[in-house]
Image (cartoon, helix red, strand yellow):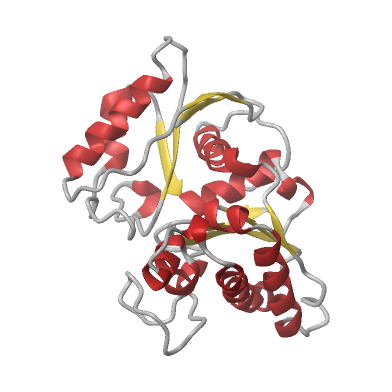
Length: 279
């Protein structure tokens, strides 16, 4: 949670672990407590932007993040509007990441790119011809559910071999019995390979310029992850237009989710913000 200025500057921030609970109200109460902590000094804010794991219904009216089982069809938008008394905009967290990088980060000079989160889960946001893709219900870009191992692990979505089931922090901890931060080099390389494999399909499909990756797993795994991802991408992108595309880290680093959420909010009220502005 954070307060973000009109130029993308993070003014104050706070965070907490997601509570281990099956109660939607316990989770909601924790969320409100964190909001109060961020705005306890009485700072003025005009809009609330939210990046939330998917899937969700259009505009985040009902959210069902796979990695947060306490919320299934939770009316996040309506609840926040009632609690805060300001306009609220909700979108997928990885789409928010794409917006944040387009306005204030490495996407400012790009018209066609994929932004990814590799963290507890795996998500993506696609900017094509300067437009952030939404899809029918706002869930476009869910690269975490591209199949990378046809006979792989069971995913939370019910399919087998999804990228999220193979390379997310949750998947790595389930497979190794240790937190992702303790993963050895072979696990870091494997996660990068899986990401590169999924990304290659998207790049070949959509004729993208670059791929930007953030999230605690990707950024925490560092060079072994990114080197493996780019090797796999190079092996599988052989078309003239896709050859040479690179996977790199998000420019805004660990504050990217906050800046992205702010961008969702700013975009919803058509505020003027710096940098490239996807429609």
